[in-house]
Image 1: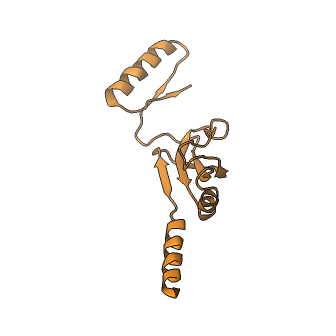
Image 2: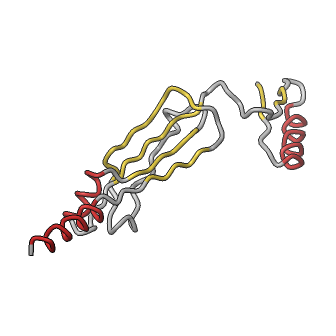
Image 3: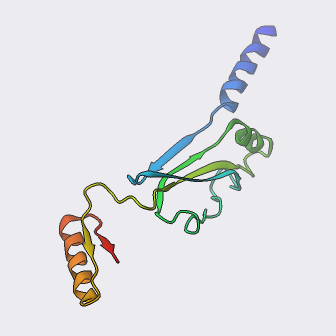
Length: 136
């Protein structure tokens, strides 16, 4: 009996400690601004995802990295609700607003013929399959 209880406790501890961590990087250099949502609402084992995290106001240079994870407390709450409510932690690191991707070309948009510069940027981006920055 005592051995069965120890085995059951060990298995329960192993199953309840199953946390996940996913990281998505964009290749942009990280800035100083981070957005942290420790209890993003998700439902039915994550099948109903949390609402979209709006970053446009805070991340002027775009996003450098997005991390989603389920902490121990998030998992505990999910277990107590039998998976109906499964919160997760979302951390967004904003990209540096002044930095461009390394090696990416930049074109200066003049006041004389801006349309031609835009057309040139589109053709160049299509040719090299990479972003082309425009300076105003």
